[in-house]
Image (cartoon, rainbow, N blue to C red; front, side, top):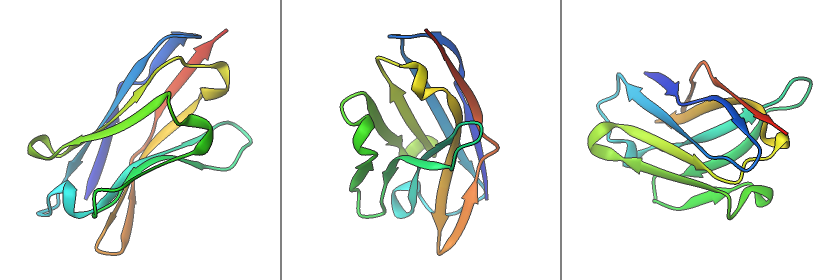
Length: 116
C-alpha cells in the first residue's frame, strides 16, 4: 500500500489549501478503511488533524474544527483535506495515514507553510 500526498505549499495567513492523498496498492475501497491526516511541525510530536473511519465517522482535532474539512472520493481512491483560514500555527508537514486491516501506512508528507 502506498499513500501519495500532494497540494502543500506556501500560503498567506487567512488563505486556503486543499491536500490530496491517493491510495495505491489495496484492493479495499477507501471507505472500508480508516484514513486521514496527521501533521508534525519541527520539534513537535505528530498530531491528529482529521480522520474518516471505516464506519464513515469523522474525527477532528478540537482546535481545527470549523476550519478544516476531510472528505473522500472512493472512485478515485483519494482523501482530501480542505484547509481554510490558515494560520501560522498550521505550518507543518502533513502526512496521510491509513489503517488497512490493522497495518498502519504513512505517506511521505507534504509541507504546508503559512506566512503571517
